[in-house]
Length: 143
Image (cartoon, rainbow, N blue to C red):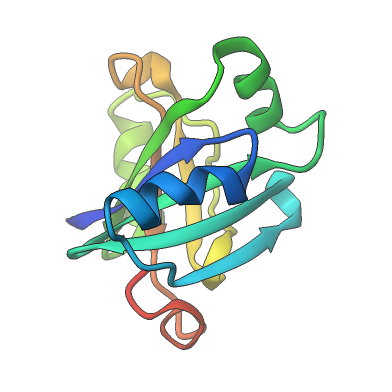
């Protein structure tokens, strides 16, 4: 079951430069910045109500996020939904014939279990699913 929108991810070429708009112009406050080696990115979380804006800066030129930035430029990358049970959600999607990028969750930013659903099955939107773990609240509050 989907609990809420966890975050909306925005790919940026320069995290520090991008923060100017989100923090100074919009008034969002930085929660934390984290290096996610498995995805080849540095992420900054900026809470916006019950959800977050997640700024993604690729640091590995071969990563999927770097290829996305090279092909499409900066902008919205994905939307992430927090779910109660990520394994059950993935099994339900697979049974419904929805193409998955990740059939098993991995550990992502802030210690969350994460998995991606292929845009071919979502009407063109990259969808991430996340489930909070015991590690997550201590690292990042709500994000």
